Image (cartoon, helix red, strand yellow):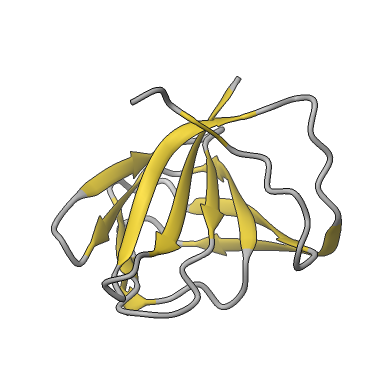
Length: 120
């Protein structure tokens, strides 16, 4: 199972995350794909996701930080499910010299989201 992090906006208006996995048995309708690369040691200050999307990390290691100060490390092969399109958002920084190469997969509004949260 691929490790996944689901970003979402809570009732408090801030971004939060839940750790889990994606299932090999769920199909999600995609409406667009985009590839992007950002140089190593880059940062991106507070922002929200531009749309609901999967972000599949191909290379690079990043730290994502929430307004609460909670954070997680995203590594190659991990899946980010970005759904925090409103609120205070999140920020990230690339932790090493490797560029962050990634694939954005925008999913159709209302599609089943492929995410299985870790047991509490």
